[in-house]
Length: 614
Image (cartoon, rainbow, N blue to C red):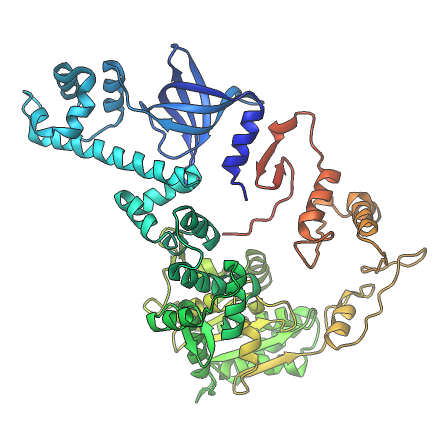
């Protein structure tokens, strides 16, 4: 697959590619996350242009060659869109002076630079790099300043050579910058010896990228290093895309062979070797990544230690009864016996699981339990995997609620949680809503931050789709007979004219639901529209999203969401998103100015997007 940089390169060549030589006058803007840089570039003919590039290492005073094309930005006017920036050594006295001054080497001022240039002229950089002792003898320079200059230029040379090595192996400039930032002077050595380390050490670099680099560096298809890395990748891929915590031997071998594009190589010896090295954990024939095995073991121990009833309830029975009566009064309804049992269980067990379908009263239980604990003067924390769920908890319970990541205080720099086994959350009760969405890794992180004295209530719908990440935590905990669990079966939240809840419960009960077909005189909040071909279905979706739903239901088009069960195929997310984008948000008369192309995807102004990574 072509990188965005390569695609941009081809695009640039098709629109009058230019090669310009000059020097960076100043950096106007830089995005440190992706390397996107806007800079002023002084050309060799004395003129100046504004240029943009997604390339690491661009800094003031740096001479170089840029390749790309001119374009007109609607807001900022004429700009040069560069898809490559090749640094070059300055060759004139003025360029060398500018280069060294703008390098801003601590302890090195303009006078020191002038003295060195006065002595060596256009060979000043070469003298600093190759003979710092001679440079130190210049009056007013000395050994310390000469060494500072020497070390700075050596570091620049190392960076230049490292980036050149990476770029020559078809690594994008952005990724090359990230690799050098991680490995520094050892970049060439590490990447040459074990390119698969990139997949382990650098977030966002997968096996496919590392494997491509390895093969270009001359590694054989059947290299043991490649085969072992492929087995690890097969487990990672299975966890990320299929949600599996482990794979049996046969399944791992089959998946690894497919990913490695090999058939006749026996991978069993390499898997055994990985098990000996600790790269894979073998639990009675179930093969895990170490981090998932550790997470699963922790969650198992946590649950096993919380199955026994407290010797004495945390909350007196009269406080529980008062909370139930107060909730019934506020909502003008009577709680079911199951709901009352759930409130009572929350005071009697260190771990309680409350499950039920839509409209079964789970939110009411959360309110009642949190109210009972607070009435007893105890500390309560509310949390959920998503911001929307946490926001709803906060509104209904009239107290703060947090996403799990925010509750545990995720540090984006270290990529770790501040709360954990050595820094427990301070609370007598923690209620987690939408628990079916929690994967095994997040569950282990959350549970490790809960002390033995804290009660944990997990609330969720066991019939919802499992978490995107590996594991089926809620379902697995419910399968443990010793865990105290309450199943809410009575339906409370059902609009008189709504059939969605009935459909959901029919499906869960294994009953074919009755869904009306749109016709005159039939009004419902769910319809079944029979169509025979993908083309017919796409046309119906366009008609519904493009106006029929808004006109008939008064729903804002921005609040309409199309869901499909797959990514690929004629009705997958890829095809549907493109069809709907062209229909709802077609290319404007301004052309490319309102678009960003990334790979095969076109993003336009006013597109609805889904942020998939925090």
